[in-house]
Length: 138
Length: 138
Picture 1 (cartoon, rainbow over the protein chains, first blue to last red):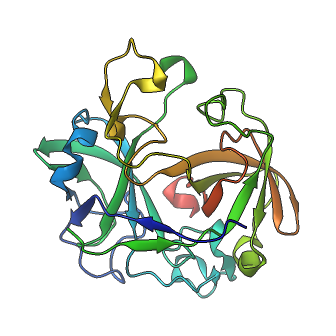
Picture 2 (cartoon, one colour):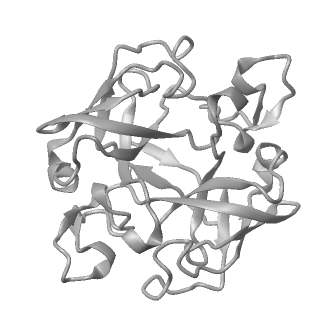
């Protein structure tokens, strides 16, 4: 096992009308609102080629999650059998990294508006990646 | 901006014939070999519902990456214009988290064999997530 640990440095933060994890949609396509991502000015050079009307993958740190949970009832439905968290999208997991495919709606300097994000207000942002198309287009 | 930082604790490690980042394929579907992921026994409860012949998303920590790089020539091709790393899949980026969609081939206790993984031997593993199907199937 690799020894030691690695330190994440947030490069932005979610600004959203969602404030309560318990009532937030579980996935972006389940009624989540649009939200702004405000980036640290230090990473402006990394986001300079983002464009509206494109899909990206946003990685966040689900800072309210529990890291000692290894199994959950999917979707908090206690009639469903307990399932190992690596087979669920539970926020509670050893490294609570959120993975969100979102569409960029608008860009205003270091602020980027994205469609349908289920992360709550104040969620730290870790990374943005392009969605990969076919190998021939890379 | 969220103050402070967050600590990742690797939950597994990649065991692969790939040892050199410079010569490794850039994406899994570009000729990457199969590789074992060896998990920490402490997370056995989290992986107990993984199954062969399913696709999962593997998150890794690209431990050899540079974190001070904000723009790159895509695919190390210097004829292509320098591009902000949030619009590329460069390993060099502020938080070098690797995102890999892989098919599980076999499971042997805490070891999971996956198809076509471009991460090099010794890469720390952070998380495993299911690929999301349509909302009606969740």
